[in-house]
Image 1 (spheres, rainbow, N blue to C red):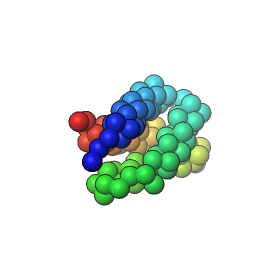
Image 2: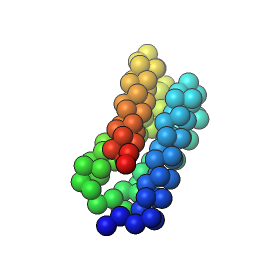
Image 3: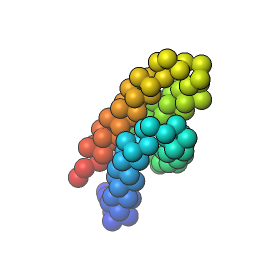
Image 4: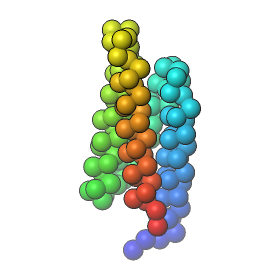
Amino acid sequence: MTDFRDVLNFSIMRKRLAQFEDELKLNRESPKSLKAVVREFVEFTRAIYGEVTDLSFRELLTKQLKVAKRILLTINMRWIILFVYRRILTNLVNSLVSLINAVINQMKL
């Protein structure tokens, strides 16, 4: 049975995910800012991962973590792969934003 605390946590989580989505879109051009946002997102996702029992939701969180880690790796390796860096990063950020939207849509009551 869902109680008020669960609904409140869902609401807070949905708002925070929407904030991450906005921050990712705004900080796309600055590697330093984007790296900070993605790191914060990874910490947030890891924190809620242990609390989630729904398998489909957990699967989405796993995919989000995987894409976020790829973004961090790409940012760290940007000087090595400079010629395709922008395209790879844009695709990964778009993928993460899409996955965040999927979680938000799944959380709608």
